[in-house]
Image 1 (cartoon, rainbow, N blue to C red):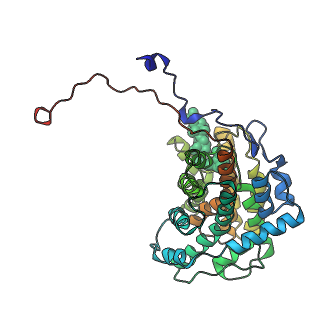
Image 2: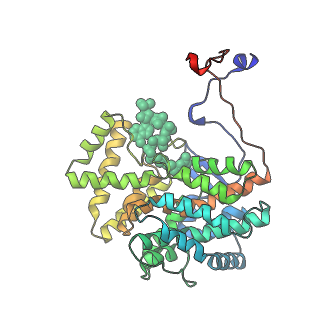
Image 3: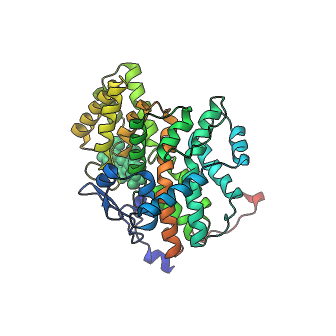
Length: 380
Ligand code: SDX
Protein backbone atom coordinates (compact mmCIF):
# COMPACT_ATOMS: atom_id res chain seq x y z
CA UNK A 1 0.00 0.00 0.00
CA UNK A 2 1.50 3.30 -1.13
CA UNK A 3 0.88 4.91 2.29
CA UNK A 4 3.27 2.49 3.99
CA UNK A 5 6.13 3.58 1.74
CA UNK A 6 5.25 7.24 2.33
CA UNK A 7 4.97 6.83 6.09
CA UNK A 8 6.92 9.55 7.94
CA UNK A 9 8.10 9.22 11.53
CA UNK A 10 5.57 10.95 13.83
CA UNK A 11 6.77 14.18 15.46
CA UNK A 12 5.98 13.63 19.16
CA UNK A 13 3.77 16.40 20.48
CA UNK A 14 4.13 18.21 17.12
CA UNK A 15 7.32 19.65 18.66
CA UNK A 16 8.70 22.39 16.43
CA UNK A 17 6.01 21.89 13.77
CA UNK A 18 4.94 25.19 12.20
CA UNK A 19 1.19 25.18 11.46
CA UNK A 20 0.54 28.83 10.53
CA UNK A 21 1.91 32.28 9.92
CA UNK A 22 0.73 34.62 12.67
CA UNK A 23 0.81 38.37 13.23
CA UNK A 24 -0.61 37.98 16.74
CA UNK A 25 2.38 37.16 18.94
CA UNK A 26 5.99 36.06 18.75
CA UNK A 27 7.41 33.64 21.32
CA UNK A 28 11.21 33.72 21.01
CA UNK A 29 12.28 30.54 22.81
CA UNK A 30 16.02 31.11 22.49
CA UNK A 31 16.09 34.75 23.56
CA UNK A 32 13.24 34.40 26.07
CA UNK A 33 11.16 37.15 24.54
CA UNK A 34 7.38 37.54 24.10
CA UNK A 35 5.83 40.09 21.75
CA UNK A 36 2.11 40.85 21.26
CA UNK A 37 1.42 42.52 17.87
CA UNK A 38 4.96 43.99 17.92
CA UNK A 39 4.97 45.23 21.51
CA UNK A 40 7.16 43.52 24.14
CA UNK A 41 5.39 41.94 27.09
CA UNK A 42 7.56 44.05 29.42
CA UNK A 43 6.38 47.28 27.72
CA UNK A 44 2.73 46.23 27.88
CA UNK A 45 3.00 45.03 31.51
CA UNK A 46 4.50 48.37 32.51
CA UNK A 47 2.17 50.64 30.55
CA UNK A 48 -1.01 48.92 29.35
CA UNK A 49 -4.18 47.47 30.86
CA UNK A 50 -5.85 44.15 30.17
CA UNK A 51 -8.63 45.89 28.28
CA UNK A 52 -6.19 47.83 26.10
CA UNK A 53 -4.06 44.72 25.50
CA UNK A 54 -7.14 42.72 24.53
CA UNK A 55 -8.12 45.43 22.04
CA UNK A 56 -4.54 45.42 20.70
CA UNK A 57 -4.65 41.63 20.21
CA UNK A 58 -8.07 41.67 18.55
CA UNK A 59 -7.46 44.65 16.23
CA UNK A 60 -3.70 44.45 15.72
CA UNK A 61 -3.10 48.05 16.78
CA UNK A 62 -3.18 50.05 20.01
CA UNK A 63 -6.61 51.72 20.28
CA UNK A 64 -7.17 55.48 20.38
CA UNK A 65 -8.71 56.93 23.53
CA UNK A 66 -12.18 56.92 21.99
CA UNK A 67 -11.77 53.37 20.66
CA UNK A 68 -10.68 52.15 24.09
CA UNK A 69 -13.51 54.00 25.83
CA UNK A 70 -15.99 52.34 23.47
CA UNK A 71 -14.43 48.90 23.99
CA UNK A 72 -14.52 49.28 27.77
CA UNK A 73 -18.18 50.31 27.54
CA UNK A 74 -18.92 47.24 25.40
CA UNK A 75 -17.23 44.99 27.96
CA UNK A 76 -19.07 46.66 30.82
CA UNK A 77 -22.38 46.27 29.03
CA UNK A 78 -21.74 42.59 28.35
CA UNK A 79 -20.73 41.52 31.86
CA UNK A 80 -24.14 40.74 33.33
CA UNK A 81 -25.00 37.05 33.14
CA UNK A 82 -28.40 35.86 31.91
CA UNK A 83 -30.52 34.71 34.84
CA UNK A 84 -30.63 31.24 33.24
CA UNK A 85 -26.84 31.01 33.46
CA UNK A 86 -26.88 32.06 37.11
CA UNK A 87 -29.54 29.41 37.77
CA UNK A 88 -27.33 26.82 36.06
CA UNK A 89 -24.31 27.82 38.20
CA UNK A 90 -26.48 27.57 41.31
CA UNK A 91 -27.30 23.98 40.30
CA UNK A 92 -23.62 22.94 39.92
CA UNK A 93 -22.16 20.76 42.70
CA UNK A 94 -20.35 22.99 45.18
CA UNK A 95 -17.35 20.63 45.03
CA UNK A 96 -17.11 20.81 41.22
CA UNK A 97 -13.68 21.63 39.78
CA UNK A 98 -13.79 25.33 38.79
CA UNK A 99 -12.26 24.78 35.33
CA UNK A 100 -14.95 22.14 34.67
CA UNK A 101 -17.53 24.69 35.86
CA UNK A 102 -16.13 27.33 33.49
CA UNK A 103 -16.05 24.86 30.59
CA UNK A 104 -19.68 23.91 31.25
CA UNK A 105 -20.98 27.44 31.81
CA UNK A 106 -19.24 28.80 28.69
CA UNK A 107 -20.78 26.04 26.62
CA UNK A 108 -24.18 27.02 28.07
CA UNK A 109 -23.53 30.70 27.24
CA UNK A 110 -23.70 29.71 23.58
CA UNK A 111 -27.29 28.50 24.02
CA UNK A 112 -28.38 31.98 25.12
CA UNK A 113 -26.27 34.04 22.72
CA UNK A 114 -28.38 35.61 19.95
CA UNK A 115 -25.44 35.25 17.51
CA UNK A 116 -24.53 31.71 18.57
CA UNK A 117 -24.61 30.01 15.16
CA UNK A 118 -23.38 33.01 13.13
CA UNK A 119 -19.64 32.60 12.42
CA UNK A 120 -19.37 35.83 10.42
CA UNK A 121 -16.70 38.35 11.50
CA UNK A 122 -19.10 40.88 13.06
CA UNK A 123 -21.04 38.23 15.01
CA UNK A 124 -17.81 36.51 16.09
CA UNK A 125 -16.43 39.79 17.42
CA UNK A 126 -19.66 40.48 19.31
CA UNK A 127 -19.46 37.01 20.86
CA UNK A 128 -15.74 37.41 21.67
CA UNK A 129 -16.48 40.59 23.61
CA UNK A 130 -19.28 38.84 25.52
CA UNK A 131 -16.95 35.94 26.35
CA UNK A 132 -14.13 38.20 27.58
CA UNK A 133 -16.65 40.16 29.63
CA UNK A 134 -18.39 37.16 31.19
CA UNK A 135 -15.51 34.83 32.10
CA UNK A 136 -14.66 36.59 35.40
CA UNK A 137 -18.35 36.90 36.28
CA UNK A 138 -18.85 33.14 35.88
CA UNK A 139 -15.77 32.28 37.96
CA UNK A 140 -16.71 34.70 40.73
CA UNK A 141 -20.36 33.57 40.71
CA UNK A 142 -19.31 29.95 41.23
CA UNK A 143 -16.90 30.94 44.03
CA UNK A 144 -19.79 32.71 45.75
CA UNK A 145 -22.16 29.76 45.12
CA UNK A 146 -19.81 27.12 46.54
CA UNK A 147 -19.46 29.27 49.68
CA UNK A 148 -23.23 29.55 50.10
CA UNK A 149 -23.56 33.13 48.88
CA UNK A 150 -25.45 34.85 46.06
CA UNK A 151 -23.36 36.15 43.17
CA UNK A 152 -22.21 39.78 43.34
CA UNK A 153 -23.09 41.85 40.27
CA UNK A 154 -20.20 43.50 38.42
CA UNK A 155 -19.89 47.28 38.80
CA UNK A 156 -19.75 49.82 35.99
CA UNK A 157 -17.13 51.90 37.81
CA UNK A 158 -14.53 49.10 38.08
CA UNK A 159 -12.15 47.90 35.38
CA UNK A 160 -11.95 44.23 34.40
CA UNK A 161 -9.37 43.02 36.92
CA UNK A 162 -10.73 45.11 39.78
CA UNK A 163 -14.26 43.89 39.05
CA UNK A 164 -13.10 40.29 39.29
CA UNK A 165 -11.55 40.84 42.73
CA UNK A 166 -14.65 42.76 43.83
CA UNK A 167 -17.03 40.01 42.66
CA UNK A 168 -15.08 37.42 44.64
CA UNK A 169 -15.49 39.16 47.99
CA UNK A 170 -17.87 42.12 47.70
CA UNK A 171 -15.13 44.41 49.00
CA UNK A 172 -13.51 47.23 47.04
CA UNK A 173 -10.15 45.77 45.97
CA UNK A 174 -6.93 47.38 47.14
CA UNK A 175 -5.73 49.44 44.12
CA UNK A 176 -2.30 47.74 44.23
CA UNK A 177 -3.96 44.30 44.22
CA UNK A 178 -6.14 45.34 41.30
CA UNK A 179 -3.08 46.56 39.35
CA UNK A 180 -1.22 43.28 40.05
CA UNK A 181 -4.21 41.29 38.80
CA UNK A 182 -4.46 43.57 35.75
CA UNK A 183 -0.81 42.91 34.87
CA UNK A 184 -1.23 39.17 35.48
CA UNK A 185 -4.09 39.22 32.98
CA UNK A 186 -1.86 41.04 30.47
CA UNK A 187 0.89 38.45 30.96
CA UNK A 188 -1.40 35.45 30.38
CA UNK A 189 -3.45 36.85 27.47
CA UNK A 190 -1.64 35.35 24.49
CA UNK A 191 1.15 32.92 23.74
CA UNK A 192 1.24 31.78 20.13
CA UNK A 193 0.33 28.23 19.21
CA UNK A 194 0.08 26.81 22.75
CA UNK A 195 -2.04 23.71 23.25
CA UNK A 196 -5.29 25.46 24.20
CA UNK A 197 -5.03 28.02 21.41
CA UNK A 198 -4.27 25.26 18.92
CA UNK A 199 -7.30 23.40 20.22
CA UNK A 200 -9.47 26.47 19.62
CA UNK A 201 -8.08 26.82 16.09
CA UNK A 202 -8.69 23.17 15.23
CA UNK A 203 -12.32 23.59 16.29
CA UNK A 204 -12.75 26.90 14.43
CA UNK A 205 -11.12 25.41 11.33
CA UNK A 206 -14.12 23.08 10.92
CA UNK A 207 -16.22 26.29 10.76
CA UNK A 208 -17.69 25.55 14.16
CA UNK A 209 -18.64 28.56 16.32
CA UNK A 210 -16.51 30.50 18.82
CA UNK A 211 -18.34 29.11 21.88
CA UNK A 212 -17.42 25.60 20.72
CA UNK A 213 -13.84 26.67 20.00
CA UNK A 214 -13.42 28.39 23.38
CA UNK A 215 -15.03 25.45 25.19
CA UNK A 216 -12.43 23.18 23.50
CA UNK A 217 -9.71 25.56 24.65
CA UNK A 218 -10.90 25.62 28.27
CA UNK A 219 -10.84 21.84 28.40
CA UNK A 220 -7.31 21.89 27.01
CA UNK A 221 -6.00 24.60 29.35
CA UNK A 222 -7.35 22.62 32.33
CA UNK A 223 -4.60 20.00 32.11
CA UNK A 224 -1.68 20.03 34.59
CA UNK A 225 0.93 20.21 31.82
CA UNK A 226 -0.65 23.47 30.59
CA UNK A 227 -2.75 25.95 32.55
CA UNK A 228 -3.40 23.56 35.42
CA UNK A 229 0.25 23.81 36.50
CA UNK A 230 -0.20 26.94 38.62
CA UNK A 231 -2.64 25.17 40.92
CA UNK A 232 -0.23 22.22 41.19
CA UNK A 233 2.59 24.62 42.12
CA UNK A 234 0.55 25.88 45.08
CA UNK A 235 -0.14 22.29 46.18
CA UNK A 236 3.62 21.67 46.10
CA UNK A 237 4.41 24.79 48.15
CA UNK A 238 1.75 23.85 50.74
CA UNK A 239 3.03 20.26 50.99
CA UNK A 240 6.63 21.40 51.50
CA UNK A 241 5.51 23.82 54.20
CA UNK A 242 3.12 21.47 55.97
CA UNK A 243 5.61 18.57 56.02
CA UNK A 244 8.49 20.84 57.00
CA UNK A 245 10.71 19.43 54.27
CA UNK A 246 13.70 21.27 52.85
CA UNK A 247 12.54 22.48 49.41
CA UNK A 248 15.76 21.25 47.81
CA UNK A 249 15.25 17.76 49.24
CA UNK A 250 11.61 17.72 48.13
CA UNK A 251 12.54 18.68 44.56
CA UNK A 252 15.48 16.29 44.34
CA UNK A 253 13.20 13.45 45.48
CA UNK A 254 10.71 14.37 42.74
CA UNK A 255 13.48 14.40 40.15
CA UNK A 256 14.77 11.05 41.40
CA UNK A 257 11.26 9.67 40.81
CA UNK A 258 11.39 11.17 37.29
CA UNK A 259 8.46 13.41 38.14
CA UNK A 260 7.90 16.79 36.51
CA UNK A 261 8.17 19.77 38.86
CA UNK A 262 5.16 21.92 38.04
CA UNK A 263 5.85 25.51 36.99
CA UNK A 264 9.16 24.64 35.36
CA UNK A 265 10.20 23.93 31.81
CA UNK A 266 8.58 24.91 28.56
CA UNK A 267 8.13 23.45 25.07
CA UNK A 268 9.43 26.66 23.45
CA UNK A 269 11.40 28.68 26.02
CA UNK A 270 14.86 27.22 26.47
CA UNK A 271 15.75 30.08 28.79
CA UNK A 272 13.75 32.02 31.38
CA UNK A 273 10.09 32.59 30.40
CA UNK A 274 9.99 36.43 30.16
CA UNK A 275 6.77 36.51 32.15
CA UNK A 276 8.42 34.81 35.14
CA UNK A 277 10.62 37.73 36.34
CA UNK A 278 7.59 40.05 36.46
CA UNK A 279 5.59 37.48 38.44
CA UNK A 280 8.64 36.81 40.64
CA UNK A 281 8.65 40.48 41.71
CA UNK A 282 4.91 40.32 42.41
CA UNK A 283 5.41 37.18 44.50
CA UNK A 284 8.24 38.81 46.48
CA UNK A 285 6.37 42.03 47.13
CA UNK A 286 2.88 40.66 47.79
CA UNK A 287 3.99 37.80 50.05
CA UNK A 288 6.11 40.28 52.03
CA UNK A 289 3.21 42.74 52.31
CA UNK A 290 0.92 39.90 53.46
CA UNK A 291 3.47 38.61 55.99
CA UNK A 292 3.71 35.35 53.98
CA UNK A 293 7.34 35.58 52.86
CA UNK A 294 7.72 31.83 53.30
CA UNK A 295 5.96 31.14 49.99
CA UNK A 296 8.46 33.31 48.12
CA UNK A 297 11.39 31.85 50.08
CA UNK A 298 10.32 28.27 49.33
CA UNK A 299 9.78 29.22 45.68
CA UNK A 300 13.26 30.71 45.44
CA UNK A 301 14.82 27.56 46.92
CA UNK A 302 12.93 25.41 44.41
CA UNK A 303 14.13 27.68 41.61
CA UNK A 304 17.75 27.36 42.75
CA UNK A 305 17.48 23.58 42.99
CA UNK A 306 15.92 23.21 39.54
CA UNK A 307 18.64 25.40 38.06
CA UNK A 308 21.39 23.43 39.78
CA UNK A 309 19.97 19.94 39.18
CA UNK A 310 18.33 20.28 35.75
CA UNK A 311 19.23 23.69 34.37
CA UNK A 312 15.51 24.31 33.91
CA UNK A 313 13.88 27.71 34.41
CA UNK A 314 10.46 28.63 35.82
CA UNK A 315 7.58 29.31 33.44
CA UNK A 316 4.57 31.60 33.79
CA UNK A 317 2.85 29.22 36.20
CA UNK A 318 5.49 29.12 38.93
CA UNK A 319 5.45 32.53 40.61
CA UNK A 320 1.83 33.22 39.68
CA UNK A 321 0.89 30.62 42.31
CA UNK A 322 2.38 32.48 45.31
CA UNK A 323 1.23 35.81 43.86
CA UNK A 324 -2.42 34.71 43.64
CA UNK A 325 -2.17 33.02 47.06
CA UNK A 326 -0.96 36.29 48.59
CA UNK A 327 -4.01 37.95 47.03
CA UNK A 328 -6.14 35.52 49.03
CA UNK A 329 -7.37 33.59 45.99
CA UNK A 330 -8.07 29.84 46.41
CA UNK A 331 -5.63 27.63 44.46
CA UNK A 332 -8.34 25.98 42.36
CA UNK A 333 -9.23 29.39 40.93
CA UNK A 334 -5.67 29.94 39.60
CA UNK A 335 -6.29 28.18 36.29
CA UNK A 336 -9.66 29.90 35.76
CA UNK A 337 -7.74 33.19 36.14
CA UNK A 338 -5.44 31.98 33.36
CA UNK A 339 -8.59 31.35 31.25
CA UNK A 340 -10.08 34.77 32.14
CA UNK A 341 -7.01 36.22 30.47
CA UNK A 342 -6.37 33.77 27.64
CA UNK A 343 -9.89 34.03 26.24
CA UNK A 344 -8.55 37.22 24.61
CA UNK A 345 -5.85 35.27 22.79
CA UNK A 346 -8.19 32.42 21.93
CA UNK A 347 -10.74 34.84 20.44
CA UNK A 348 -8.04 36.58 18.42
CA UNK A 349 -6.84 33.27 17.00
CA UNK A 350 -10.38 32.10 16.19
CA UNK A 351 -10.94 35.29 14.16
CA UNK A 352 -7.59 34.76 12.43
CA UNK A 353 -8.42 31.13 11.64
CA UNK A 354 -11.73 32.09 10.04
CA UNK A 355 -10.01 34.75 7.91
CA UNK A 356 -7.57 32.32 6.27
CA UNK A 357 -9.12 28.98 6.94
CA UNK A 358 -8.20 25.47 5.91
CA UNK A 359 -9.43 22.39 7.77
CA UNK A 360 -6.70 21.25 10.21
CA UNK A 361 -6.33 17.52 9.64
CA UNK A 362 -2.92 15.82 10.16
CA UNK A 363 -2.12 12.18 9.41
CA UNK A 364 -1.12 9.10 11.39
CA UNK A 365 0.93 6.13 10.30
CA UNK A 366 -1.19 3.00 10.51
CA UNK A 367 0.97 0.44 12.31
CA UNK A 368 -1.78 -2.03 13.20
CA UNK A 369 -2.57 -5.49 11.71
CA UNK A 370 -3.72 -5.91 8.08
CA UNK A 371 -5.61 -8.41 5.86
CA UNK A 372 -7.41 -10.16 8.73
CA UNK A 373 -10.58 -12.23 7.97
CA UNK A 374 -13.73 -11.84 10.07
CA UNK A 375 -14.40 -14.79 12.44
CA UNK A 376 -18.02 -15.39 13.54
CA UNK A 377 -18.43 -14.93 17.30
CA UNK A 378 -19.37 -18.59 17.79
CA UNK A 379 -15.91 -19.54 16.57
CA UNK A 380 -13.85 -17.06 18.64
C1 SDX B 1 2.07 26.71 30.04
O1 SDX B 1 2.99 26.27 25.26
C2 SDX B 1 2.79 27.35 25.91
O2 SDX B 1 3.05 28.44 25.44
C3 SDX B 1 2.14 27.18 27.28
C4 SDX B 1 2.11 28.39 28.16
C5 SDX B 1 1.18 29.45 27.61
O3 SDX B 1 1.34 30.64 27.96
O4 SDX B 1 0.19 29.05 26.92
O5 SDX B 1 3.41 28.95 28.29
C6 SDX B 1 1.58 28.03 29.56
O6 SDX B 1 1.42 25.72 29.84
C7 SDX B 1 3.41 26.64 30.71
C8 SDX B 1 3.84 25.17 31.07
C9 SDX B 1 3.09 24.74 32.35
N1 SDX B 1 3.38 23.32 32.63
C10 SDX B 1 4.15 22.94 33.62
O7 SDX B 1 4.75 23.71 34.37
C11 SDX B 1 4.24 21.42 33.79
C12 SDX B 1 5.69 21.03 34.05
N2 SDX B 1 6.45 21.22 32.81
C13 SDX B 1 6.76 20.05 32.04
O8 SDX B 1 5.77 19.04 32.06
C14 SDX B 1 7.30 20.39 30.65
O9 SDX B 1 8.30 21.32 30.83
C15 SDX B 1 6.35 20.88 29.58
C16 SDX B 1 5.19 19.99 29.42
C17 SDX B 1 5.90 22.26 29.87
C18 SDX B 1 7.13 20.91 28.26
O10 SDX B 1 7.57 19.62 28.09
P1 SDX B 1 8.27 19.08 26.75
O11 SDX B 1 8.60 20.17 25.83
O12 SDX B 1 7.42 17.97 26.22
O13 SDX B 1 9.62 18.55 27.33
P2 SDX B 1 9.82 17.13 27.98
O14 SDX B 1 8.69 16.82 28.94
O15 SDX B 1 10.09 16.17 26.90
O16 SDX B 1 11.12 17.37 28.87
C19 SDX B 1 12.39 17.53 28.22
C20 SDX B 1 13.43 17.24 29.29
C21 SDX B 1 13.18 15.91 29.99
O17 SDX B 1 14.43 15.44 30.45
P3 SDX B 1 14.89 13.95 30.02
O18 SDX B 1 13.77 13.04 30.58
O19 SDX B 1 14.89 13.95 28.50
O20 SDX B 1 16.21 13.76 30.66
O21 SDX B 1 13.35 18.23 30.34
C22 SDX B 1 12.93 17.60 31.57
C23 SDX B 1 12.38 16.24 31.22
O22 SDX B 1 12.62 15.33 32.26
N3 SDX B 1 11.87 18.44 32.12
C24 SDX B 1 11.55 18.48 33.41
C25 SDX B 1 10.53 19.42 33.50
N4 SDX B 1 10.25 19.91 32.28
C26 SDX B 1 11.09 19.30 31.44
N5 SDX B 1 12.03 17.80 34.48
C27 SDX B 1 11.45 18.08 35.66
N6 SDX B 1 10.45 18.99 35.83
C28 SDX B 1 9.97 19.67 34.78
N7 SDX B 1 9.00 20.57 34.95
